[in-house]
Length: 322
Image (cartoon, rainbow, N blue to C red; front, side, top):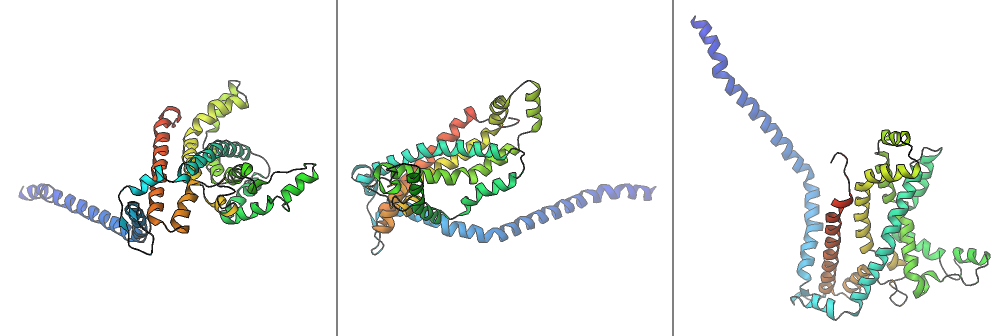
């Protein structure tokens, strides 16, 4: 009877301690895994803090100073921002030109990339080859791409104008060298690069995520190609459209490389975008304090536009299962 009583008492007395030891060992294992995760990610974290966080904080401070690299920063408070909004002749014009570029670039790039993705999503022979052909130009560095287009659109000796003359066009466009066409030429190149690039790939991934059963159901109900696209594809693709739209707006407001390489902001400031204005103030005229202030103005604009898109997306973005 005593033995039976002891056998019954063993699990009662030792059970909780065994469970606690198991839980403690599991917790220790999870802690070790988390610790080693932080150890392996430490190089990236340090790089983020040093090469991203540090410059961001430094630029915020320099924006309130007069800093010309060769001398120590001198605190001037809001003088740089006051100068930007009231005394800089190129501030508002460059900002307006950037908004004009964005208004031309964003809708055409989004719609063009979507249509191209729809075409490449068809189950045709050689589809993978077509996808590669359209995406390869996106792999070319932006500077090299601008140099190539500068040669192609050279007014006198460029192949494009030579081809237009062969077609009978007596006075082909001057492209980058004319004030009336420079902005549209830069916009055209950026749209060409965007349509077949990451924007198209993201749309293609989104299209491949649309269930085929929904298209089959639409076919049974008598829906044609346009009806399927409007009532099936677009609603399920709105999260992808929203994502690409945010990236496109940010990229458009930061436009820099093509104008810097192909036109230098000219002719007659026709392509003097806001990012180019920041670059010239900071790295050409060495007004680091003023350039930092302009950079934070651009950052504030990007934050406002992105927040606006996030808020308004609740009205038109539909998530599956939501």
